[in-house]
Image: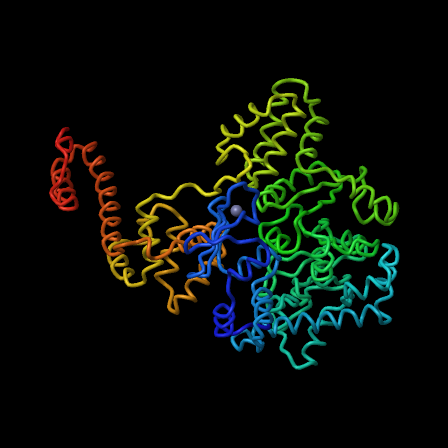
Length: 578
Ligand SMILES: [Zn+2]
């Protein structure tokens, strides 16, 4: 597994100027020590996108997007982290030595095993034992080109065909088991193949490395599909089938077609839709949506019209919308899955369907209309709520505003009433030209405390001694506290691990806290003390309330003393009442 050494990443970061890089995309205007621009990630009329050259960080006070130069490129270009590093290294003329990570040897072995198994399955598909499997493929209209492209194979109808082959190559049956390809024999010694007499479909990660397999029964035997179990290289719901073959086309068109099954994807690729991937489950998972986000701006889902399937896809719709991806929905004629439709009706018919994809709001409203006619007030309200729940997840102002308008039109009500309903649902803001802040406001004392910790490393010991992670009420601040406390490395490394934290909310809050210049804080030690006292006081106040409710006068007195100490003797008269 290729990886880029830390010191090279540091070097790339030091030699790249975030101001120059961002200026290649949006014109920046210097105001004082910061640069500002209209945000490239949301629509706004007054610039809230801020770049702090000293910290080499950007943050948008409008939509909360923020981070270092790598994060900017990842968000803007859809790069993965290593791709962003490589891109900037190339610009700066820094060579990247890539080598295998020694501690990943076990993982390398797993990849190697999947590869060896795949080669074996492919060989048997072509051999005399593969006749039935070849016939099955030709019945399903899978041509030899697709067989090669998707590296399809055949697992022999034997108990240990694969185990024998792999051990012949010098690996152990135990390793075949670890790769999810064999099972230990019950009671006795030895192992047997997990996949027997099945058409073998390798599942790859986005770079094309095989991580697992799907095995399709050739006849009517059950189960129809067996999949690899989870291993260190394969997790259910993390990969998208066919992405390594589709990524280039998706990047070019910025549109991904998403289908459900292996053969739907294979069939669509063969029909001339190379931007197709399969979810291998009814609903897209958060990991899969994040993966799509790297390549696509829009996702078109191709469903077969089974209502249960549509219901199951709902969670995936929510995730797509929350990730600011445009969503189109193609519904095929009843009883047709994408595979049969593509083969029977051909490319042009499918192209027409895709071109006529409904956007997600139209789709939901039409479905509601089909079910209820949308005539009664109650039906309308129910449909509106379902659509509003989705709209409330949309971070972007313009898209939200458009959907609100559309919803109002379709229901024949005013936009104002739709917006009022949206606010009632607890949406962060009504849709306007500038996007709402997606996060809830943070408690000020906690926020300032963690901000000072971030910006002034010398204050950290004081804070660690005074407050525990679990005493902070806001979860992103708790996470930042945890990272700060655990981190052993340079300040650059620390900034990087926060800028690339897996939780987007943590990244966003970290960028917001980081973007401030240190000169804005005159006396950090004093500020830390103040924040700690404020937090302690809040805590005492809560305890005081409960002590009073329980009538525990001794405890009340002790807490009042504590409060007096904290406030330096100042205590209000009302504290003694009750
Ligand atoms: Zn923004």
